[in-house]
Length: 398
Image (cartoon, rainbow, N blue to C red; front, side, top):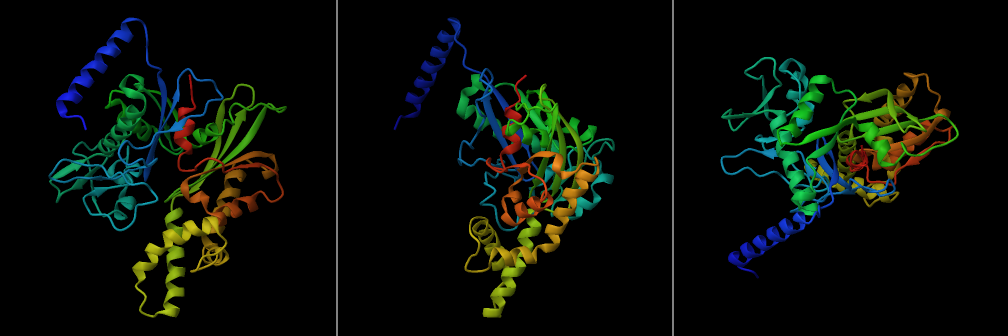
């Protein structure tokens, strides 16, 4: 193992080599960086700026943990701050009150806009000293307050460290493509942009998340006989459902959002609760003293098993579907509502894209398929739905 002095010498030699190569005109390849600053998890993806269209972006894994997803969590403590590097598949259990999460739900909003959301979170949400600014989060017994933008800066900074670990500081572009939900208003979009600007980055494109999901599958590059095609993006995340109808111009590749319909109180967490209740009821029949919190822990494992198998030792997929029938009905209704908004018949939809981690569940996918029972669109499930938006953002090359 090299001692610190030897490592210092190696670093000096590498710096000298880089300077010599730069003198003779060599430049490291630059990359397009796409970032999905999510509600629960954030992802970065890269693609060489000069790459052919056929080259796919790559998701950047965290430089310490190897996880593709960085949890949007930030604990504030008296000692040096650390960001939780938890993969979404590993996060479990209650969070302490000095941990901020779901910051995206508050970004760019004043206190009068978040009273409902703030009641659902254990940390304190307070108005900004300047009434025109967004809310702040109060932690550590009100001894410290930070804004949603501050939290975003910390998360993006961590993502950029991972990008630099892959491509080097010279290859990591200061230009990024970022994504926002369709429903974000101008103050929310401006606040999101400010996250990146505070890190010295230039936002070259700000695109809407369903557009990025379609671009991840290169739907903007495919041509056909018709002058345009219609794409539906079904995005079921941990806490919200969004269904967007897009129009893609087959020759120019431009994408327009025709409509978005959603359910802001429906997500993967609701299915977790239903499954935990089902497991608890079944276990209580065998053991009346079965601890209820065990069922919540078991639910995540059982849900993953039911994604692959028809049944587990605890319950069957059909039982889960029956228990979650109310949630599935809401999904079905949202699908049709999004198409009715633009008077669209399902038979005119050419592609359906699944995004968001909760869209992996077969009982959810079957519900979406049922909404297109008499139509024949292409259903896209090949890519990891958690990573889709970042991959699409990195696939945008000006």
